[in-house]
Image 1 (tube, rainbow, N blue to C red):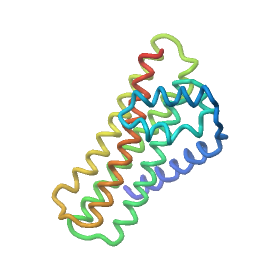
Image 2: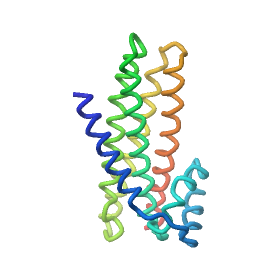
Image 3: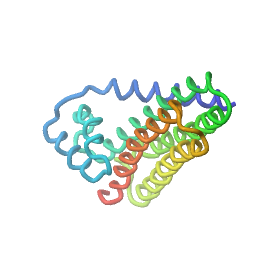
Length: 194
């Protein structure tokens, strides 16, 4: 069941990645500066800017579009990591295999929560009044939960002896957490901007 769920999440990540890639990148002048300014409020501003500046023309100075882009990039990263964890599981045994199995499940949950965040923000730019607050609150909750599930994946390796699999997974999870943290910060920024 976990592998079927993961396969669904990986397929979803490919779809989101394709949607991101289909957006024509551009320099966007003022939009690029808008992204730089917004990314300055994140925990990883350089990563934030470098990962999204190429989509400035699609963002067009809209904080909702920027948060959606960050969420979709996060979802794609979670999907990529989950795929790698599945590959590593094939040759693993013992505690490493158990940690990888748990990680597969928690990354599936993180992907689901990032997907829910993206869905909640769809159409948010035209929402009014209390609906905006409700939907942003939901998006904040789900993106925070995704970050927690990523932490749980790393925590599963606490009882595992040091080795290349543990090092790789923990390093990759930390990188995905940076994307997730940035996306959460940009979702949080919607509270101030709307």
